Length: 462
Picture 1: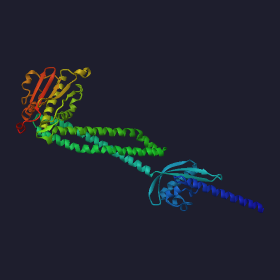
Picture 2 (picture 1 turned 120 degrees about the horizontal axis):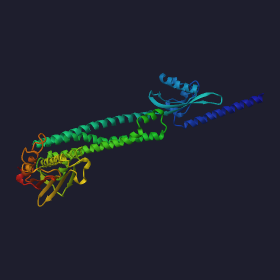
Picture 3 (picture 1 turned 90 degrees about the vertical axis):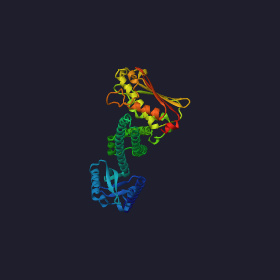
Picture 4 (picture 1 turned 90 degrees about the horizontal axis):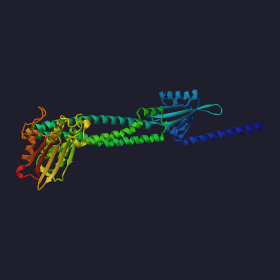
């Protein structure tokens, strides 16, 4: 009997040692895992914890073993944990949920907990739980949502401001034509320069912030890619929200959206520069300037009138610029001469539509409405600017009166008859040059501006 008892004691001791060894080995193994892991008995008490769980909770293993959720967490949180645990114990179904828990410092965290039911060889049931920390991910998602909201708001603001700018420019073009034709040249220059200045500030602000906003978005997308790489299997809620916002489409379309906004802002900046160049408010006195720059700025302002309409094809502008030095002139006034002649050329081309010369469906490439602009240096010291159109030409009975004040071939209410009269005065009296025209019915009209490179002192002081 003593021998049997000794054998049993030795066997129990060996079994206990094996159990202790297995437990120690299991503890070492789970301590090597960075995710918090815990084991609960059927009484919902912790019986095995890895180091990551203890660090996560903020208590030592000795403080946690044998305790339940109600010993550490607020009752509301403990009720949730207990209910989820009991579901696993009673059904054996693996449970995975996003939860909130409060640590020892009173800070609330987002966690993802996955719980399994485990049964040992004696039929005892245990609950195994693995925790993933979601607080940083939730913060990134919230930041991304906030950033998207800011981007949408910025997009809407930019769209609204662009529309307002387009409306302002449209009104400005109409206003400038009225002012030019009613001999208010000085007021026009001030208006154009003032509007250009006011537009330039908000456009520069928008343009300067588009590139950083685009870079911030790319950084957030890069961060999102890292999360997808390291957490390839998102929780159901994240997966559903990703599908809801069409994340793949958003990631491909948002850079295109920024590119479009940048192109639009650059276009507005070009228009503003053209307005400032055209007005030449800071160059009211005689000054040497680039004539081509003045022509180009004028063309930019009337660009909308060159586009195709439902009645005629697009007006093609052909430039043949010669090599010119800087020309001494009143730049703002000379730009207004270009404006008057170019607007008249466009009007003449549109009048030709009434004769059926250009039809959208039957247009020929060699017979589209066209404006030709040619510049040339005429030795020894003159510059010639030729502006021609291939419209219907000027009637013979109107040629002798073309530069007379208040004479116009346009219908009542569409012209004052002052544009060419003022232009003739600016070229001949202010610049000591000449303004002439050549026109043949049915073939078009060409205006020829000729001014000296350097103004005579008595003329510049006039």
